[in-house]
Image (cartoon, rainbow, N blue to C red; front, top):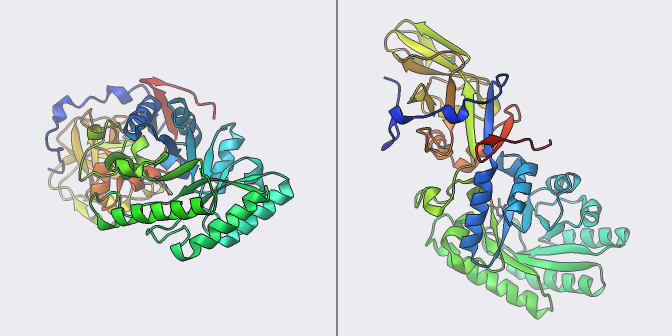
Length: 406
Ligand SMILES: *Cc1c(COP(=O)(O)O)cnc(C)c1O
């Protein structure tokens, strides 16, 4: 039989009533539980023990919807917001979200001036970027807020130790000229999700050296920060003034090999639900979906789930992805197509319109995003972030549907 049950879960107790009340016109939806997000932020603040929390809302808040999540995170006490691209940071401002925002992924051309005028903290890793920011500050007649990023070992963005003395000195000179203010000095971990990895201690040491150099040239940053979600949860000595939490805030464990979200006081924020678009009896030996990778072992009932790789369901989960339908875990039967995939319901009763829960918090018997990550050979970050624009986000707060005004 083409079904699996999570070890320890009781499929007979699966209760889908939580997802019954959705508007009839929706084919599928991602439910975003803002109360869970706020509780996660509070939980992370407690872990950060005195350090401030930056809510990382890049990539449409990891697929959860940037503006509602940014607002909820702020309500729960996240003092900073973090984005990758300038477009994301400016979209926060356009929606009326104020307060500190750090943006870290810049390319020549900016948009520097818009960012300076919107009082966005601009991350600078190299002289070319410092020069473009300084020129924009001069043109705008305003001081730019700059955070200098050191490469302490990740090898991605950030300034190499050999170039750091020159970059910090140039930034200090621009500060003296009244053109910028260096508000932060920061860096990013490579392997914080592998506690004990030797690079972690090496990066901490390199970061302290970068801070010492910055202070020696006269910089006095408001915030010094290094920790992402895994470091926030497992490495208190990395917290400094601020922790930058992304995935943990969305209730996903950044170190799934060490603990579940609940072990860290977190609860998954996104649930992905669809209505069966077809339920039909087919004879044994019937091929299912493109390539006929699955053939019905006997007469059976097939259910059609109207979500596919265009909606972010990984095609790599063909034949492996778990779905809760009619009280049991089913496995994607055959290929995931662009818009749909099939599950084999065996002899179980189901009707069109029945809920198929792909993932959720996991406490109603449904799979989690982590289960999908394992099925598709990826990480849960990617599962939630790739849920497509065609899937409406439905916001709830303590079980009730809320309008976010978008
Ligand atoms: C995405 C990102 C984060 C958040 O990482 P999580 O592991 O999701 O907490 C923090 N800092 C930087 C620079 C990032 O790019």
